[in-house]
Structure formats: C-alpha cells, structure tokens
Length: 529
Image (cartoon, rainbow, N blue to C red):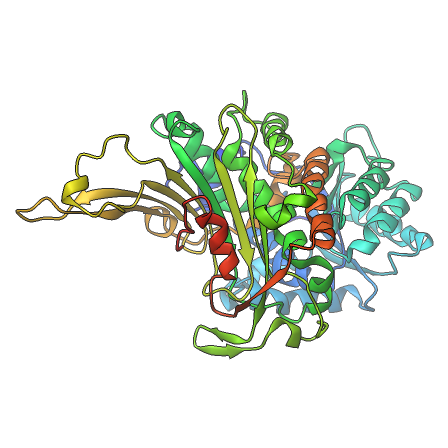
C-alpha cells in the first residue's frame, strides 16, 4: 500500500549512524536508500509483542519516512477479526504505546491502509492457503511486489510448524528471481543445545541461512551499536582495550520488576535462559571482539563468533566456584512492598528457578588472557540498569599513595545501555585547595543532552535493517549454537553438583551475598551502577 509523503533517504550501516549529532530518526537523511516495496506478515498479530513493540516500531519508520512507498502488513492470528477490527485494534495500541497523537491523523490514515488481517490457525498447514491468497491479493492491488518478510511473534512451540508450513505452501522462496523472502524469529531460539540445534536444522531445511534473522532486541539499542564506534573509531581507546591495561570487565543487566505475570514462562526459562544465553553473551562478544576488516554482517558476526568460541567452558564440577544463583524473597523496591518469587502467579511454592545469576567467564585469546568477565542479571533489584563497565589496572607507580586514600578508585569506562544511555569515564582528580588531596570524578556523555530528541526503539532499527537485508545486528545460527554450548553444561552442573545451590536475596537488594563473594575471592567487588 502506498504511504504518501514518504521520501527516499540514504542508508548507512547501523553502527555508523551514531556519528551524526542529530535525532536518531531525523539523522537518517543521509541514507542512500529505503527498503524495497514489500509485505510484512506478522504471525501472532493479536499478541502483546505486536501491540507494544512491532506496531509502534513500524509507525516510527513511517514517521521518519523510512518505509517503502508500497508497503503492506498482513496480521495473522487465531483471534477472529476482520481487517477493519484489526485496524481499530492497532489504532488503540499505537495511542497507548506508539505515542500516536490526535495531530497525526494523516499519518494514521496512511498507515491504516497498509494493515490487513487473516484469521487462521498457524499450527494447521492447510490454513496457509489463506496467507497465499491474501499475499497475492495485496500484491496485485497495492503494488507491493513479491518481497516478503515473515515475523514469528508466537510461542516458540509454533516456530517449527510455521516454518514447515511456509515451505510446504511454497511461501519460503521468492516468487521471482528479483524478489527476496526473509524471516525474523524471536527468542528463545531453543531451550538448550539440543533443542536449538533441532530448531536450526528445521529452519534451514526450508530457508537459507541468509534468509533467517534471529532477533535479539538488545543489539538494536543505540548504545550497544555505539560500542563499536566507541572502540573502533577513536584512536585513544582501542590501544588500551586489552589484557595489558584492563583489569576486568563487568556486564550488568538489572531489573526492578518481577516476572510481571509471566510466572509460567519464567519457571521454564529462569535468568540464565532468559538473559544470559542471548543478551548478555552478545554484549560480551561485542565488548571483546577484534576489529572486523570491514563493517558488514559477515565480518562483524565472524568476530563475535570467535569470542564465543574462545570463552572457556564452565564444567559442571566448577559451577559452585564460577556461578551464583539467587531467587528473590519478599522485600521492598522503590518504596513499595513486593512479594517473593514463589508467591507470584504461575510459580511453584517449591520452585528453585533462578531469578538472579552471576558468572565469571574467561576468554582464552591473546587480547583477553587472564582478564575475567563478570556477568550478572537479576529481577527485583534496586533499579533498572544495563551497563558494561571496563575497569583498568592501577597505575604501576602510585606517586600519591602517602597523600591520599590507598583504595582510590581505578579508572573505569562505563557504557550505559539503559536507561539514560551514554558513556562515562571515571578517573582521579585533585580536590581544589592548598593540600594534595584526590577523589574520583566522572566525565559523562549522555545521548539525551548531546543529540536531543528521543531515542529510536531497538525494534525500529532492527525491522528496518531486515527489510534492507542488513543482518549485522542479528544473531547467526552458529553463534546461537555456541552460546547454548556454553550455557547447557552450567545447567547440567546445577543439577548434578551438590555444592551448587540457589541463594535467597530480599527484593530491592543487589542479589545474594554469594554474588559479592564471587568477586571478593579475586580481590574485586561489584561496581554500583
């Protein structure tokens, strides 16, 4: 469907888009192309992810003139609706989650014309004839051509059936040589190494690897992308980004919320599957990777894969030394009393599922030999924050030891991913006055104050990249496999190792005391984000 007023803009790689000083959406004026005309088919179109993230992201692209002039969205779900009802459903979602204002009536009208809906059961292969019929009708009437993007916003149990049905219906291959077909698969991609390999095999029986986009929304966040620019576009940081200068690295993803009504899902996942296997290992790989020869999808993902391969596996016998599990009990977060995890809806009173996990990883590479990477993630912590903190070694000869506190903080670079996105550098400075006294100070860069405007949502960036055929910020099949190869033995160790246990921690604290002891054993401590 034609979106009036959309203009052609120049495309740059996602990471390099941070070099401009303009609004993240407005600054795309220097892009060399917008996506080709296409149809996006969303399986699970009546679900929460579509309402909260996908539709607002697509509206943002329309606002910024970054959707093709001929574009269509076909929503697919079991929920019985006609297209008009679906449009009303999306309209309400965009007012709530997409900041759609009353003054944007023209934008909504043009966006609404792109929306179509098909009621069907995606677990029944015969039903896929309805999708074929609707795609042909949309293509002939709307001029969108044969380019297609499928988005699996469904329970993971439907991934393989939908993929097989698309293949059987002849919908996995382009209808003409000049067309493309791509598929975005949401996490979790499997629940362990075996299931991930089975799913990958099933997907690749129908789609080629270059058609498959395994989404990790963390990789679409501006500060995550800026990590590459920070490292590789600045001559003062990359030379010290190695074992000669770095003492250790901490990666933290803290959430103040609990399981938010998803107790049933979380009982099956836990913090390890929900956060570490995907988000946290991807952040670690970006932090530790070598400079790619070129900034393209293959080169960047090759370097990330090398990091994952170089991480020393945690054997089951070592999980009590190198990992810590925790589960929150009742407590107070932000001045509000909150229940224990075992009191959450859908959670067993006898549950031993971890809501907090901390790990020590070692990377066996020339750059990072003997530099520990400490990773932690948890729910019901004091605040919501995700950051990467690189802590440097002490100066070899401290001239001022006799004049100041001997425990003076080490230099630290902290990349804040959310909220208050930015980068800070912590270093020592003299306190004004006649005596030689020092204290640590922080030099801050904040996106909000430096660039102005609001940050583009991660899904906005990732959906655009997929339509453009840029897989740089998507996980490749071999990296998913490698991540599960690291995580699965830890799960096995938790079951088999009698010295491994789940520690309680009150909601509103920074996790169990055993997590602090993990670093204290190395003479270090967690940074307070």
